[in-house]
Image (spheres, rainbow over the protein chains, first blue to last red):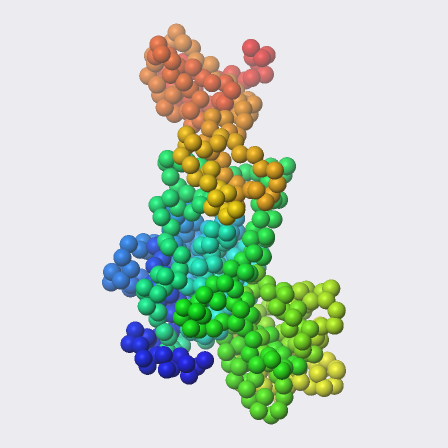
Amino acid sequence: MVSDIKKEFLQNKENKIIKGNEAAAYAAKSSRVQVISAYPITPQTTVVEKLSEFVDQGLMPGTQYIKVESEHSVMASMVGASMTGTRTFTATSGQGLFYMNEMLHWVAGTRLPIVMAIASRGPAPPWNIWADFTDVLSQRDTGWITSFCATHQEIYDEILMSYKVCEDHDILLPKFVAYGGFILSHTSKPIIIEEQALVDEYLPPLPDEKGWPHIFIDPERPMMFGNLIMPSGFYYEFRMKIHETMMRAKEKIMIAAKQFERMFGRNYGNGLIQNYKMDDADVAMLIYGDLAFQMEEAVDQVREEGYKIGMVKLRHFRPFPVEEIIEIAKKVQVLGVMDRGTAFGSPTGGPISSEVKTALHNTEKTAKILPMISGLGGREVTIDQQKDQLKILIKMNETGELPKDLLYGTLWHGKLEVK
Amino acid sequence: MSNTEKWKDINKSREKRPLVQVYKNWKELPPIPISFPIEGSIGSTGDWRIFRPIINQEGCNRCGICWMYCPEGTIKKKEDGSFDIDLQYCKGCGICAKECPTKNIEFKREDDLNGE
């Protein structure tokens, strides 16, 4: 994939060497977003900074750029903007995302297709601004579709795919596009910025003056929303509908990924997960975010030593790809689940590994699961460490025994130890 | 049936759309709860009232300040220029009594009126 990008990059003058955050900004520009609301927070700041430059230079004609006083107001103004029937975009990180929390529920409950880039960082205290997905994973139950990006190009591509899925009239849900703070947000790589005409063809048309089909602000068709519903009313059923829509979104995500590949030539598995050398693997690692990109290299190196190992990149956390994970767990003998994030007190301590175990409940003859955690708060995870992680899985497969230094069943890999 | 088609009724203009939509089950529901502005869509809010405003028609100079200030639009202007309070929806907030410049709106406890 890397060499393909290089070849394509050299052919096209439009392509750029830019940072991950700038890739998110370029994606918003390519998507012709109409309203951007912004409040700076490290490591996300350069996303909205770049967008303010675009708006200032007149590169995004007609786009409204709103400056507000807090993240809560960012999301509140996004709700107002999206209700009028506009394509909206914003970005945030860590504590800023937590401050938005109330409005995040409001967005999903109002079914507004807002897309938000998240340069993930570790939650404070102690203060931390480096890659850790606990921020976005802790927003698990807000009703937002959640995806992770592993490469710079994927940030750009995923934001385009997000509008395709979210604005589908059968879905209408908001989406987080998360990527590791600094590791992707502040490093530069060559990125293919697609031609505007192609992007316009791929994306659904911008909403017209009639707005979204279910909500609009129009004096000719007045309506009241955000109503109070008594327990005997349909509250329960409206919540049920969000879950049902989320599950249906899986299919739309797969279609969006397939159409994306046909149009732009970049493959992202089935959209929900992406397999790497899984065809003959009997040991596999499920991993997400930037660590997955480096893990491809580690898998290659371990394979050179003669082990049949594969990797599964989790692209979507909500909706959770249950069927795909069951299929993988039936095929391999040992499945490691690597988290870069925490869920304190959960069955495994890792947010994704808990989900994987839940997904496999009631399925017989599945792989042994080893929940693993590494790279919290931006702690460096080297290729050698990743090879070590893979070898732990291989050893587990050979001996049938769990590694020894587990903390309540989970391997916390790469912790500091002074000898 | 696509969702767009299912919700086409709510997209019609004020005159054309149905005032009440009946849903048999959760699958028929639109994605979010909405309501259309009609008189008394939340019920007879007059039931909430503790105090009742009573206009003294003889002293009233018909300035219309109460009519302008009423937050619920329950004060109606009659053809002869006098004002009447719709007690089915008046919540008894007392703003009209407070704002009346000639102090001709009395504010009485409902219990003391004995259902008059």
